[in-house]
Amino acid sequence: DFTYVFRTAPALSLMGQHLAAYAEKHRYKNILIFYERNEYGRNLSNAFEHFAERHHIHVVERLSYDKAAPPDFENVITKFKKFYFADAILIAGNHPHIGEFVMQSREMGLELPVIGGPELLSQSFLDSAGKASEGVTGCSIVDLDSTRKEMRSFVVAYKKRYDKEPDIWAS
Image (cartoon, rainbow, N blue to C red):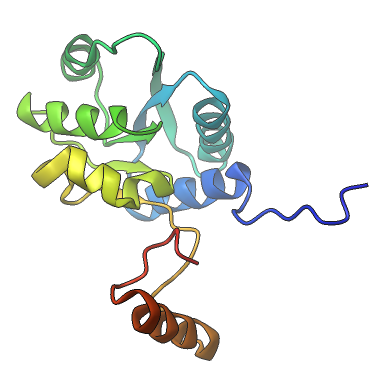
């Protein structure tokens, strides 16, 4: 009867909605989507594309990769650079591939803004992408900078207990 089942993260449809609104606010009118072929990647990409239409954003191309097979990022990045005009890339995938993709994109001169889900805010992504993670935007599930009393209390208690700053997964 699911009496004790709780969802601790917002639905991907909500993240897609916020990412589309962010893209519109930053005047990203043409978006490339690159996603992992799994439930998360497809659902976030589909949600973004659904809401992109409402924000008058054109999805230029959707390409995907399979986590089980080594992704050919060079081919994808070359295709993005050579054949498509875009203002940004939405990436929906998991580690370590998303960090590798962003790092290789920058190395190959693809300097488009990158937006995506909360995985772009994780330490694992930052470590795998290195300096290429600079300027990447992830949709957060929590605002650790909030001035709300409850959040401030949580941050103080977390620092005291673990002797480090909380990340979005700590809450």
